[in-house]
Image (cartoon, rainbow, N blue to C red):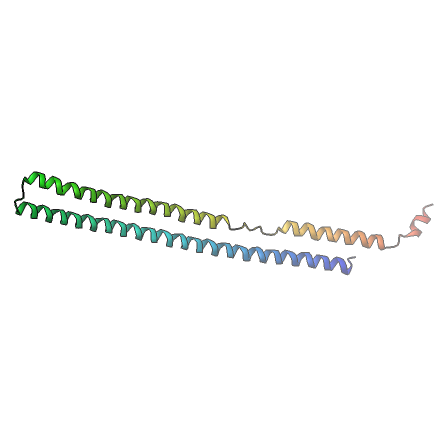
Length: 174
């Protein structure tokens, strides 16, 4: 027969299992929320980077247009004043604007490289957040069953050892 201590041990084992299961379930929900938040942060980062790329392209186009208009105006002014050889005027003015065009292109390429780097950083942050999520281990029902069986066996052995041996059965056989 089972004693009170054994029954309490079995009850505690079952309660520990339920508690561990509840904690694991809560951690799973927390991990799911962390992943969702991480995905949202990553998408926000990528969205900002895309917006910056569009703005950089728009800025480059506007600057290219401004420079071409300025170059055309200077060429027209120089030709209209009849200030010498037209070809040389064009080469002189065009050469100066070529350098400005190269400066604008260099600045744009630098912006694009920075944006690519930011994309890599955003993905790296996403990976770090995902890697920081602790895996969840659900408690084992088999482990619970083995623990209950062990407690039951210990209780049965204890009750058998506490029971006085039947001396009459052994005396009658001699």
